[in-house]
Structure formats: structure tokens, C-alpha cells
Image 1 (cartoon, rainbow, N blue to C red):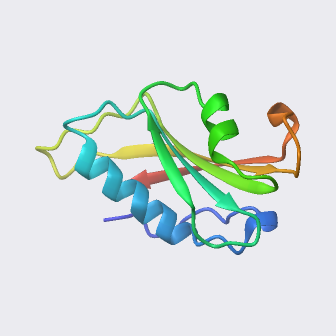
Image 2: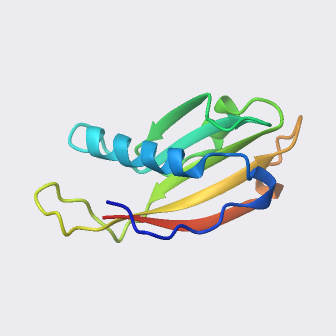
Length: 126
């Protein structure tokens, strides 16, 4: 089950299917929880596309190198970072899992990721 209202995605990547991305995050989280430590899930989306070409799971928060390797020129990266204050316990349906959703627009031929436009939303899964 998902919280009914999502934050609005950033205008510059409005073509991206955020509902599908968030469903993918839920699926990855549920399937891999017991076998992998998941801290961040990163998706790379080429400019003008609605769906990611690839994704990667990180067990720590070191995402800059992964963004560099995943992202084609002029693309967007959307990554979901598990909020450290929330824990998932597979035995209780009442547990809450929260991911921070970071949306980064990467201009063509840019390595200055710290200067790219970024939007932050919080997405809660029940």
C-alpha cells in the first residue's frame, strides 16, 4: 500500500513516470530486503525518456560515482535514499518505510554534479 498523495515531480522532468519508479522502488525493497543491505536505489533516465535505462543499489550513501557511471549525457538521475530513522520489519504490516527522493538534472557534458538542479521529496511506503 502506498500513501495516497505524492509530491509533485520537478517540472524539468515531468515526462518521467514517477508512479512506475516508485512502484519499482517498492518492489526492489521488498524482494531484496532480506538478502541485501539497501541504502540507496539510483535510476538513470536519458533525456526525453519516461523510463530508466538502468538502476543500481548501494549499501551506503556514496552515490556520486554511481551517478557518473550510470548517466548518459544530458539525462536525469532519480535516487531513493532510505531514511535512516525508519526501519523495515517484514513481520509487521504496520511498519512504515520512508525514502527521500532526489531528482537530479544532469546537463550535457557536465561533471559538476554539485551544481546540477536538484529536487527533494519524501516518499512513504506502508
